[in-house]
Length: 253
Image (cartoon, helix red, strand yellow):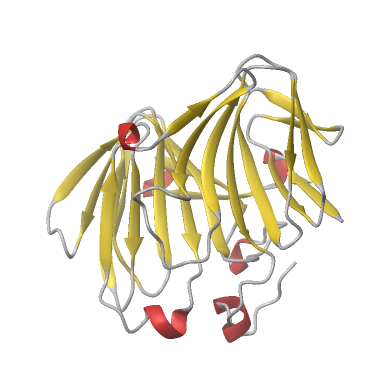
């Protein structure tokens, strides 16, 4: 059984465009020196923001599925398929299936923030596929609400399909102070506290903290602030194929 909490102060850091774009990385690249290395089908997870706007210039990708979740404000995206800039607003989601290769650039506009998460599909298959991407508006995702919480579902029974093995991606807002989730032993649950503070199985977490839960029978959340929000990803404990980390002989957690 395992619960690992990575406070925001212990996450890897990064910057682009001379510091105009800043990042905290719950899962950094191997060279970032962060506490958590890639695991399951999660290769990279960054929270990025900009106060006045900044540019990440055009650069290439292959194989991985790269997802951008716009948390606040507005971003702009350019890629070699579209050959033009497209805006995404808060709540929108983009997936790039980079396949055999694609280049893209990103602008994070003033007062905007995003998650960018890289998922590791079976690269033996995806590297032979042409690259593709899709953009989805926030309003296109189903929202389920009960007296305890509100859940926005972005992956898992929605129109957003992935090559990577991902059970679900959800954003959950807690209305009541306590909520318990039963867990499956064959899965890993990774989440980021977007807003507020809570206790996870009696361990305290605050805004910006990250947790990995595996081989637990349940997650018991005790929200310490009204409308505490988390962003949660369910992935397999064992992906069932050789991951990039294994192919490259990199160390894991």
